[in-house]
Amino acid sequence: MSEKELDAARIADPHLRESYERCRRLNAAHGRTYYLATLLLPPAKRPYVHALYGFARYADEIVDDLSSTLSEREKADWLGTWGSAFLDDLDRGWSDDPVCRAVVDTVLRWEIPKQHFVAFLDSMTMDLTVTEYRTYEDLYEYVYGSAAVIGLQMVPILEPTSPEAYDRATDLGVAFQLANFVRDVGEDLDRGRVYLPLDELAAFGVTREQLEHRVATPAVKEALAAQIARVRMLEERSRPGVDMLHPSSRDCIEAARVLYCGIVDEVERSDYEVFAQRATVPMHRRLAVAGPAWVRAVRARRRFGDGMPEDGREGSSPGSSAA
Image 1 (cartoon, rainbow, N blue to C red):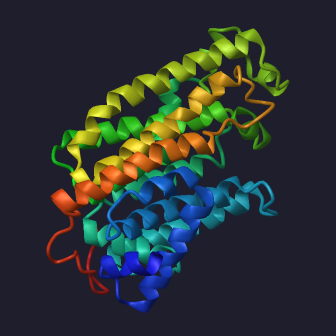
Image 2: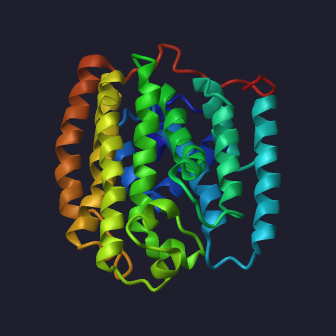
């Protein structure tokens, strides 16, 4: 399948193809829901989405790897060196890094602003030094760089029909990340972190120390329910953005919205037992969403095309600028 996708995207250089394939494998291994949704895009667009998600997952896994023997300081040094090299690669227009090579190519082809990657790397650095957030405003700075900018990077590939699509993509990216935080309270504690605003927890009489006991008390459940309400508010606000994309892109984002925000539905079904189990959207639900979406996506491609320019966005040569 990946060979066909690369051919459809007119990615011919063997080194680039190898890099895009590496990114695809990262996306498939670490983002099952995102990967499933990506398959609803036209084949010619999938490699570019794999590149963006592969880049994000590569950095994120280094930061979050509990089995790593690196200290937080060593991780920060690695991230700083790797991130600076990547940003330099964007400026010069090519990369020798086996992951970043495809990402730089994607940025150039789709004219994705460099500032989104700067914000992402800043948030990854925060993850190595910040272990809790006092307010939602404090948390939002991290969430913007770790999640919202991923959506903003994606929007050019999805072919927006309105500038408002970027605002709605920000809402959806934040909703995805907050849904993660609700689901992963226990796992995040294992990493020494709490991603729920402390002042909002305190409003329900919950402290970090109580979370450390890993018991879903009535107060903890009420606090989680309040966080879920914010996820749903942002999800609802993001929904008009789907119709602001090229028709061939809509079913991908709609499926991702339904499945990923559906995580909080599963948290509710488990009676907020986030310490005892990891809430996941069951396979039958994934198939029920993905099956009809696939049919609609194929019909949209036949009717409206794949949204790709006639030139296929041929890759830029080494030395061009991504700034």
